[in-house]
Amino acid sequence: MSIDYKKIADNDVGGELDTALATMKLLTETVKLDEKLITYRTIAAQVDLAASAELETAIKGAETMPEWVHTSLSNTGININDPQTEGVLNKLGLSDAQSIIDIGVDEVLMFPSLRAGHLEVARAKRIAGEI
Image (cartoon, rainbow, N blue to C red; front, side):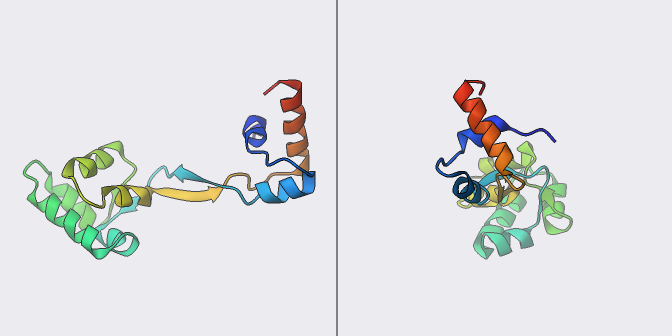
């Protein structure tokens, strides 16, 4: 596993090494998942029931919508992180489209295995102008 010293240096909170390390271990970032299957039920639980109902009505009412889209949203799920899915949601003009799209992202720790040595090296590289 390679260490991204530039990312560490860019997010360095400064100050004493131990304090900075403790603070940086708590930093989070939003990442888009490779695949996140959603169904009407998922939307009802994570956004709200009205958003689920609005999506179902829009999908069923859209003349150009293939039947498998409704079937997938009813049963197995559809990948919210597929660019086509996001495009369809935006095209439908749903009031909660962004909230539905946001189901496909997750908040994770930015530096889950950060060590004091990593931060020291990142600081030294920044001072030396290497990053």
